[in-house]
Length: 259
Length: 314
Image (cartoon, rainbow over all chains, first blue to last red; front, side):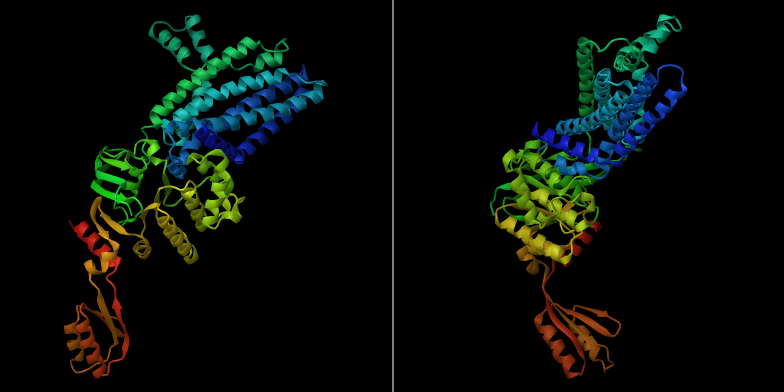
């Protein structure tokens, strides 16, 4: 456990000081500020526009960071051979992989928390009080990251180039956000037979990130908090899905040769 | 020196496989050697001889096609076999944004230094390589030589029983080289087994008890360093200024083992003291200007070149 923690902390410190993180935060802040302007020229609730834009920015930029840093993480380790020094100690490869995963997840989650809290403070200024549903949204975004970061680890274990593993990871995220649409084609008889079976199978196989996306409920819903039971089951789902991805990543990574 | 092996390599074979054609080309062929506990073992060879490949096999970074590697009696594929090993890689790279202290703490923890001893182990290692004052420096701000010092510090942070050094003097200035040599000597005298690959043969000769020479993936031989002058022969060198003389140069050349014509002088090598002294006397009598006359030890370099060329021809 101590070895995983040591790799996690080093990965976190290395990532938190990288320029990529601050660039992502900068663009997210710009988007939220621009949304204030949109709010003033849009018919309807200005606060809802800011909230919608704000949560979209937090979500998409944290995912972008996870995809970029996740897929370059192993590549850089191999290219710069920093991995040699670590694996030359009495460290199991799965410990290295988990340490890297947790480090990356911690950085991406820090990004969500810092941007989410900034959004909460910004909205407080407009609403005159805190909207704690933002915290629920942040919680679900972190769950989404749990899966996306694990997918990034899996693809970077399989594919050597960060561009390809980045594309695969981002495609998994997009497909995961569209799983409900797959069933739409089956339900409305747009496809049948083998194609329908394939779509159902894909729906089961792909991570159901749709269920973890609560931005619409937070922005347009009437509830003051999301049900605890849903948070719990979503957590179990995300952890199990990420667990399977990490086991697969380890099965590939432990056979890897570092030429 | 103990006669129990710290490293035992038996019939090690490794093949590189082309990604496109899947064709295998052998990088190591039946390499076998023992490194005894407490000795300093030099692992030499030209570029591409298979030294780094062997080291990667020792550290389980790549898996051999066949053969066996034991580290202190344990199979090298088990991570626990590396618990007593420190490794300094060739061209070490570290995480740019971490400070020297953060990096060293991580390596100490990965090397199994227990919680409350981490800080003192880190400080001790950094002091030994002269980096204690750079504790808070970010790694990206360090020069190549200073990075090499950190690399050595992380290798020795847990007081390893076996130290694997791949080109340890790379990037060091003369002062740094001398400090590293002294450090390696002190580690050896404290009982640490040293396994060292280097192209700086004079350092290897000065530090190691035994050396092995690899060429083209094959181990050409293992030699005791203290027996090198005898095994490779000592010689005498005489350099004289060129000056036309009535056949005197031919007389000197006949005594010599080899003659090199330089721009304004001639360099002659003699295999025996007697012929060298006769030639020197003749040269003086004939009025040649003597540029230098010296005794030369049979060097590791000569042995190395001889064995490598033999290995590559074979």
